[in-house]
Length: 544
Ligand SMILES: *[C@@H]1O[C@H](CO)[C@@H](O)[C@H](O)[C@H]1NC(C)=O
Ligand SMILES: *[C@@H]1O[C@H](CO)[C@@H](O)[C@H](O)[C@H]1NC(C)=O
Ligand SMILES: *[C@@H]1O[C@H](CO)[C@@H](O)[C@H](O)[C@H]1NC(C)=O
Ligand SMILES: *[C@@H]1O[C@H](CO)[C@@H](O)[C@H](O)[C@H]1NC(C)=O
Ligand SMILES: *[C@@H]1O[C@H](CO)[C@@H](O)[C@H](O)[C@H]1NC(C)=O
Ligand SMILES: *[C@@H]1O[C@H](CO)[C@@H](O)[C@H](O)[C@H]1NC(C)=O
Image (cartoon, rainbow, N blue to C red; front, side):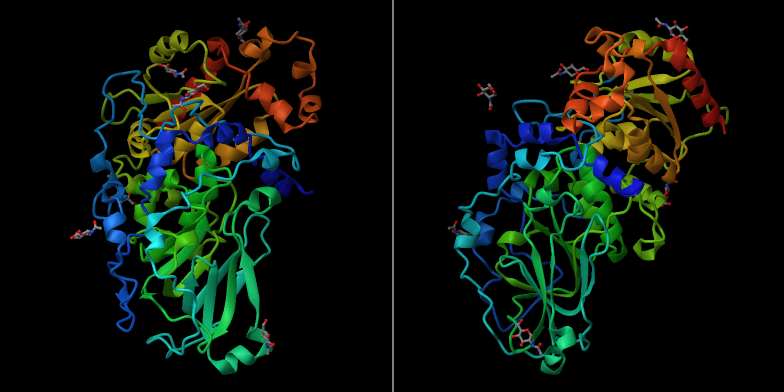
């Protein structure tokens, strides 16, 4: 395998441990699932077909639970959150809302993984929406019944679905014209005239699992295939709901639950795929995970003006002028202008992330200009592994160099908007390699990201996961590899152990073994004498 490809695979995950914990699904989560925030049958901006009044004024409205509707686009997400930029130093930022009651809540960082290891076998199917969902039992099954129908107004053309199966990470079909979606049967129809339909060239079907982790075949098996078919007017189901907006169909699950994966597998790909629609796009989520929609509602609401539908359960036929099945993904946390619609970039993603939470600072204030305010340095704390053991000791030393220090702990349960404000208030973010560093997306331009690399040959992974994307977003990046005496592995293994002498031999034993040791059992005691030049360099960068 070539380098890039290996790297994609290699980074795939160590988060299954986290996921196993997560998927033990505490009761409180099950309860949340029952009050699922999807489809309530209201379609603000969609016109409905007058001929079929059946499904629209559905009984759903009585059953839905408006109290956990995601915030409407008019309601800036942060209004619901407590004001948060801490004035006090070293404030711990944690919020209880999404915390499962048992087990670790902090994601394991992205990490090395050797290809075909049995992650997926241990993998539990993602959180399921209860099968006995009352909403849908009350619907008359709207099984697609052949129905003669005129061509939709304004959609006079037929264009063959444009599908791309060439990427190692994702498959994607872009379907334009008169497109009809039946979620429950996982079908997308590209409607055409009999004449076109009969041409062999158009009589094709395509199948897409709409989640950009294609190379993890066993992981992908949890996602339903969406079938895209060209169909004749005489054979396709009639529209129950006609939309003027586009739609994007994607699946949650996979490695979601790890903050890094949430962003690199879904949030950034969603941005790449749907930002061009300026909100005029509806999300249809397969394998829907409620917590994901709730946790990231602040971002999702800025991408889509419409309610999010639970694709797998949707019995109505939704008609759109354009439907994209699948998500485009570039390098991890990176938007490549050459491949992105409208040539957007990671810089635009940064703008978007800050805008979504109405963050104040676009860019850092240059040191030495204007105010005498100290640069603020945010230490990303970790609880369970890769913790900074001597934090109390080094904080005063960092302060003595002229920084104001704040501590943030990006627990799974955190409120993303609130944490984003803390991050955006900082000029420097520093932490040991781990998913929490994904929060760099909320830093102001020109801020400095300092990644501390634990022992175990993780330099390249660290660079790839966070260093390159941070630079691509307009940040400065410094990487610090710890020495043996700064690692708590010294307390566990003799100094001549292969753990120190030959990390590659440990990696050859499989990612589970290697990550179990280097990422799971290692904490860091910074040697400030050795680390100090990084902070001096940081001050230089802030002056530029
Ligand atoms: C449904 O809602 C309507 C009006 O909101 C109410 O009159 C009716 O009793 C409700 N039905 C049920 C079954 O709750
Ligand atoms: C948490 O785990 C403990 C032991 O594993 C169990 O006894 C307890 O019931 C669990 N609590 C919840 C809320 O799931
Ligand atoms: C189109 O596909 C259908 C079903 O796959 C098949 O029955 C039909 O013969 C095909 N028509 C042409 C023109 O290939
Ligand atoms: C930050 O940047 C965005 C996008 O370029 C712009 O709309 C906004 O006005 C800027 N905010 C400030 C405070 O400069
Ligand atoms: C996590 O760390 C914070 C402080 O850093 C501490 O207050 C809290 O008890 C820790 N939680 C666990 C589960 O260790
Ligand atoms: C800390 O680093 C300095 C500079 O590399 C080194 O001289 C010193 O021995 C280290 N201290 C410890 C306790 O290892």
